[in-house]
Length: 179
Image 1 (cartoon, helix red, strand yellow):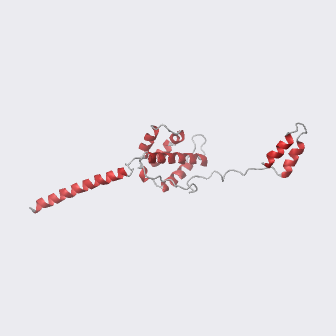
Image 2 (cartoon, rainbow, N blue to C red):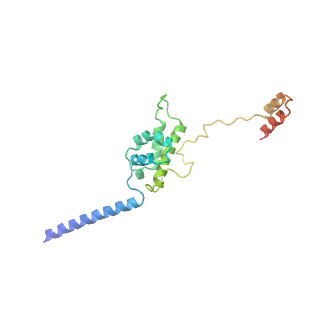
Image 3 (cartoon, rainbow, N blue to C red):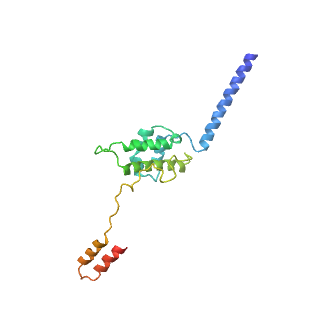
């Protein structure tokens, strides 16, 4: 009789465990996380009407780095590692590293994939930072040189070199400098 009770309790425990797993899996799916991998997400995105070519352009890089990882398990730390890996990737033609602008485009494509997943209720929250100056994307403004404006002496020389005819040329140059 004791043996029978043990078997019954073990069977009941297995049933309860199975039901709990099903319940947790259903709750997990109801929360928008149906264990979707990045590869599956890209396949869904490729079927979408609002497809952007820059997302598909980096498909190979996304799959090489993230593989078959679940999108819900990709963290911000992974995004920084992806950015660094992408930066050191040589170009297809030329062998030099990818430019910061190209890396930013790859990150933008990945961000678009995560927003697509959120819009289609496959993910609750994107691992991308909400604040624009988080440091994930490379700043393009730092690399640009400052615009060189004409000095006042330069403008005087330009105005003096303008011919008297046509009459509107001098006022036009002066107006252009003032605005």
